[in-house]
Length: 116
Image (cartoon, rainbow, N blue to C red; front, side, top):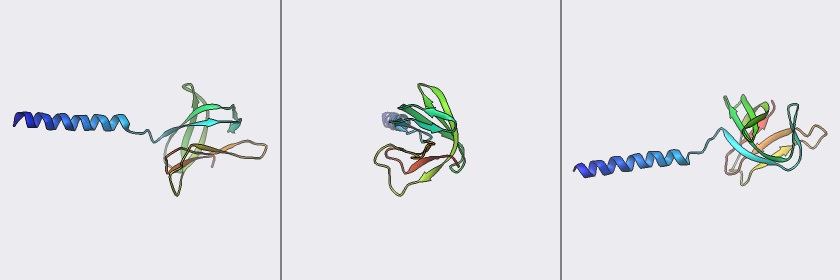
């Protein structure tokens, strides 16, 4: 009886710790820029970046980071997608402003909309 109780506790602990290890941070995502893009007044060069956000879904504070350093901040919101995005993609305005408008992250049902 004692060994059965020990086995059950061990299995429960393993399940809890394993679930935590595989938990996805839903307030950040990685993306690549293949061309320069602007966030606010900051021009980002092509490269690999990470977006992190806090706040309510309709009033987010977004930080764009590279190599652990915050390069730009912006306001934004989460936009619900009809299906999971099959890949990570960015939407950049085609006008002269080159503003980064949206980031869709792979396998997520929401997109990050920058600006108001």
